Image (cartoon, rainbow, N blue to C red):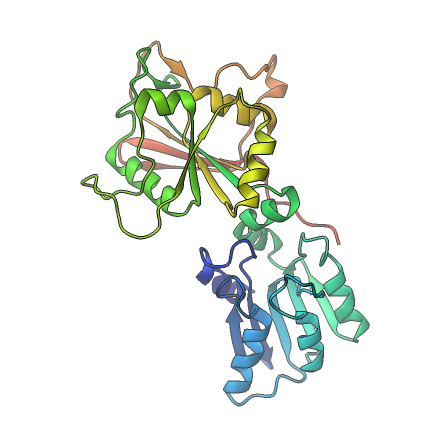
Length: 323
C-alpha cells in the first residue's frame, strides 16, 4: 500500500477534480503491474495497473490488487471511464485491498459491495489516514461542493498582519515569500479582501526571486468582500467555474469571515520574530468567550522558514470513513 500511495502522488496537480489514486497487482510477493490516475479524464489507476500487468506478459487472474481508493462502480453521462469494479471482476482478481472508501455518495460502499458480490475478498482501512491526507482537496470538493480553501497569513510575533497605517511589507522573510509563491503556483485562484486590495494593490501572481512574473500557470485573482452576502454562495460560484483550490491571503476582515463561517480547510501562518505593539490584528474578534471555544489546528506541524516560523494546520483531522 505504501507503493500504491507513492504512485498516487505522481499526479498531484493533473487529476482534479478527481482524486489521486494508485494501484498495483501482486501475486506470491511479486509485483505484476502498477499504475496511477495520471490526468483528469484519463484511465483510472486500476485499469492502468491491469494494462501494465498484461504488457509485462502476466495474467492478472488470481492476483491481489492494492488500491488507495475504493474502485468506482457507476456510469454516467459525464463520466469518462466505465466502472473499475467491472474491470477488476472480469480480470479474475481474487482479493482487493483498499486504503480508503470513496466519499463520493455514488461510490461509497457500493464499489466494495460489487466486488464482494462477485466473490472477491475485500479488505479496507489499510493506511487509510495516509490516503485521506493525500486527497483532502478531493474530499472537500465532493462533500462540500466548494473549493478547498487555504488561508495564508504573515504575522508579527505579537499577532499583527500590518502596522496601523496598513503597511505590511515585509513582515515575512524572503524564504517565506518563496513558499507563498509555491502556494500560488498550486492554486487555481488567489483571493484577498477589498481593503487589502485597495491598500496594497498586491500582484497575487507567481514571481521569481527578482520579482519577475513567471511563465506558465498563473492563478485567477479574486477580490472578496465579507459585506457582499454569504461566503458560501461566493465559494459555490467559484466551484461552478472550475476553481478547485483557493488561496486566501487576507486581510483581517476576510480571515474573520472564514473562521466564523467554518468555510476553510488549511491554515498556514508565517510568524516573524518582530514586534509592532499596535497594528491590524490577524482575524479580529471571533466571539470566543472561553478556552473551550478556541480554534484548534488539527494535524498541525511547525518548521523554521528562514528567520520565520511556518505553522501549518487543518480545520479538521483526517478520520476514518464509515462504509
